[in-house]
Amino acid sequence: MEKFFKLKENGTTVGTEIIAGLTTFFTMSYIIFVNPKMLELTGMPWGAVFLATIISATVGTLVMGLFANVPYAQAPGMGLNAFFTYTVCFALGFSWQQALAMVFLCGVVNIIITVTRIRKAIIKAIPVSLQNAIGGGIGIFIAYIGVKNAGLINFTSDPGKNVILEGGTVISDASAVPALVTLNNPVVILAIIGLVIMTVLLIFKVKGAILIGIAATTVIGIPMGVVNLSELGGLNDFSSAFSELGTTFGAAFGSEGLGSLFSDASKIPLVLMTIFAFSLSDTFDTIGTFIGTGRRSGIFSAEDIKKMDTSKGFKSKMDKALFADSIATSIGAIFGTSNTTTYVESAAGISAGGRTGLTSVVTAILFVASIFLIPVASIVPSAATAPALIVVGIMMLASFKEIKWEELDEAVPAFFAGIFMAFCYSISYGIATGFIFYCIVKICKRESKEIHPILAVSTLLFILNFVILAFI
Image 1 (tube, rainbow, N blue to C red):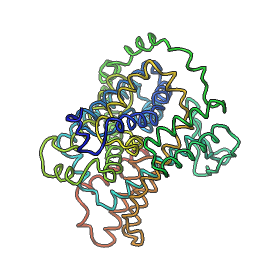
Image 2 (cartoon, one colour):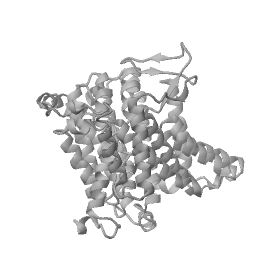
Image 3 (tube, rainbow, N blue to C red):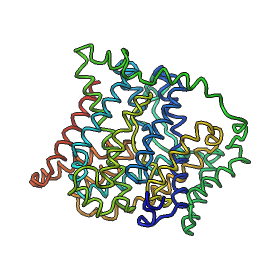
Image 4 (cartoon, rainbow, N blue to C red):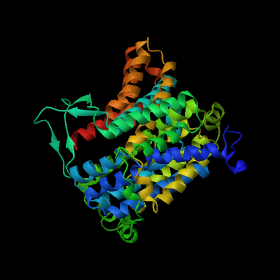
């Protein structure tokens, strides 16, 4: 194990990696329940999506750990599954089989741009100031997810300004105003208790502070009535779920999937643009996660980055990690789920000390185990995992100190790449606006020659994506 994962070389131990893997799993295990609920709205069977979610997360995370030897976990991405459901299926009218076909093709596109070094070239083209902004921005984004999951804020919108989508989802306009909730809800109170526990443990530099905090908060939640132990009363019957998996497995290639996707010539441009939108979001979500968490932690060292610049093939960790991420989406589509991507919640495991692929292997094993131990995993409330995301987000804000905020030409792009990421609730949209304003600043300063051609092309593609989304 030492020889394979190079634990000593990376300054870690088996115990630390196991704790990190456990931490990552519990901070992202919500996807096991949320993804099936989201995709079920399209007509896909819940049990099939449940298993497809676990299978895609397991395979993608194992490849990340065993091939790339980095502590990142993969699973169907939040945001991308909403795009799959509400935009592709509901708004554009594609069947879920056709949507899966497009996700599979998106995965193929990601593999191509990874093998041809385009993805790597994009990373090299991003200025250091923007890379630091992305790192800090992901910290704010993670913390904001934690604040939301903890139930600490609610939103009030003007009457008559809401749009109710099929399935009951409500979309409000900019009149929605966030506010601190009344602190009389046991879930919110438990989340605050958990946040205090984790903060104290981290201040005293207790090993495994985040995982201990999650466990302690869960236990405290029992007498508070937040944790329901009756859910431990036995294992679910999964026979129906496995039989339903036959409905989605390979559906992307059937007559209702790829077989009909290009049958209507008038819809081909729309199909291509949808695949492009899937790929753009997936690509930059992953790049943002790697840049934001890998630089500060040293997972992608200066030596590794140099190797990525000079070597061919998959010699560096970054090369391997990008390839591992690229194949996960197509695998997920084959089994029956939306885009599989590298999870920003991996930062929780990294903050717990995870530095090698052993962390990912532990997380993958837990995903497999969750098929049979769903009652155990499900009793861990969001109030216990939300504080973990908040404290991890706080740690990642250190990247902002490298930005020259007193200089507007650097501060403006950094603001949009970092702060705007949380406002949009999207890593890729934060990166997009950062790129756009970086180009605007350089053009105003008559320094357009300093804009890397790849960054310029990426910016134009983002603008094109926004235009397309405005008309579909």
